[in-house]
Image (cartoon, rainbow, N blue to C red; front, side, top):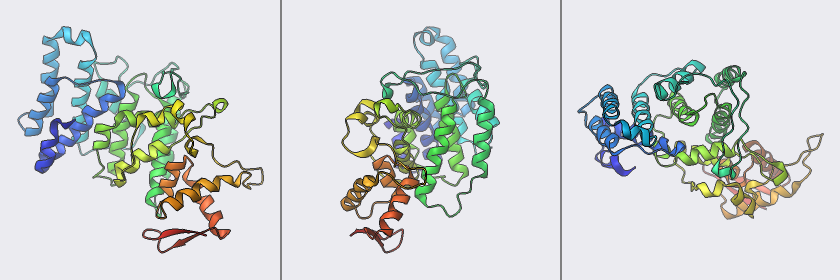
Length: 353
């Protein structure tokens, strides 16, 4: 992905912006194990330089594969090249509508003439073997209800208010939203790339115009695996759904934090071998709402003692608990006199008694 870094270093605005969208477009092919061709890289470079338009890019790629039919038959490089060009074009546009129709249209534009079902809702149930799950699959939404579920998720998000939420709360909510959207798996193929583009455009609508797109360029497979882990659980083996990895990704993307993004850490076998509480369930609560197992406070206090400026979002990511659980435990610890907040919420620090 260093192909276009010189444009970012030079800082010429128009070229830098094009380089960013091309890096994202090419990096997103990793989610399906695809690699664009050298021809696509060179054609993209000409577009960044301003020598050719996106329409000319697409026309050249189409002509290239018409002339090299054997290349298309060998692997999925043609798909990677065409979809990369289409993603770059979409991300360069200054238009977006937050709606189910827009979500469907992204898939149609990305995969027209690649998949016969481009832009169409699947009418069959699916499973997908995942490396991060050791060959197991996430349980996706059932065919027949997909459009209704999509409409519901979009409508709920439209009604949601971000007013007065902290940065950490915004990240946690966005993680939950994109996790639910992805799990619907509206399409037979191309679901993650479609969801990523829809999310990027939605983040821009929310005002995150300077989001670190290098995250999608360099860690798109991590993004996909994080979505998988947010939607998979096997209680018989002590494996629980967790949005912690997705929160780390989005935090690095939007807040420029520096969480390490390692795919191997998400593998369920690695999770079972951990000694920290990352893969433990949230607090067990009885019918009256009282916490049954108060020992979960111990790792939270230990984390604070390691770093007395740790944020609630960082606690959520490190411990694998929901943000609401972390905040409830902090409130309980403060009420019991075991924990005190000194200074402001933004610049203060924790004091363990």
